[in-house]
Length: 332
Image 1 (cartoon, rainbow, N blue to C red):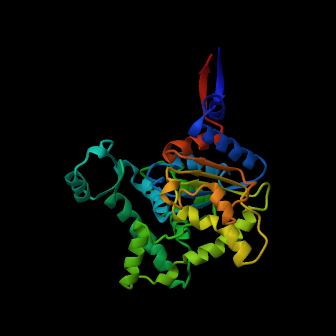
Image 2: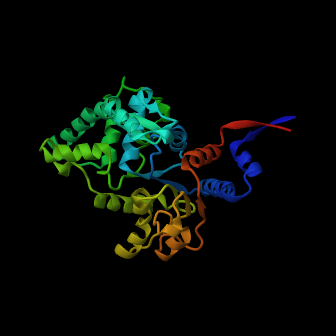
């Protein structure tokens, strides 16, 4: 006898212990949070865009299951790089056995390796660079200023990239976000390829630094976005991939509103982190949720989960389960 079994059912039937149990419990709580009218913020570090997280993240955005994003500048731009240069990416599954000379050869071919994947400079960086430079210069001419992600939104929603897609636009999470005008914060955007390029143009006098809104302004923007998104149901949840500034920056918004603005604020309504960072090494990125209680970022009543595993495996599985539209066949 055969019956259809959703990915969420698979979680419930198979994943009972250790990190698989944490993944299952976090997924069920995530879904319950949304079902009760709550919203969700994704904090995304690492190289998730190069790892094609957009395949499952884009539908999460389009179907209204992800409502705000905090990400590194690298994840922001690499979503677009994948869109315009997908066929030109190279894969190196044997990277563990590379010699220094192998990586030097990759450099000389104009590629930039991220673990087993390399981003092609000419097909990615140099295709996007003149288009976004045009947006920066247009803003300067009009004496306008925008956030880093807003320039990407302008580029994606214009005709400037049309005809340049090598990847599937359905798999570009940033395009999905642009179409919904999803709130995004990109702390430390300068720490990215296009951020470096922007700094270079500023140094050369090609464009003024003032056309780019700052990280402080991002926090001011997040104050308002957080208060709006946390109004409904159990509030705004926090789903974190990796560590670093993409997670540390947005989670501070709650204590900042409470102590710096001295205004009432709802606590985070859910917390989950997928990480392989080791707490005992003093890693702030690996701080347990309990530690965040002491900073008034979470409360003792917040549903909290830590999944110590590979986000490139765990996050897509969780997103598929929450989307609940992909099915497997169970044989009995």
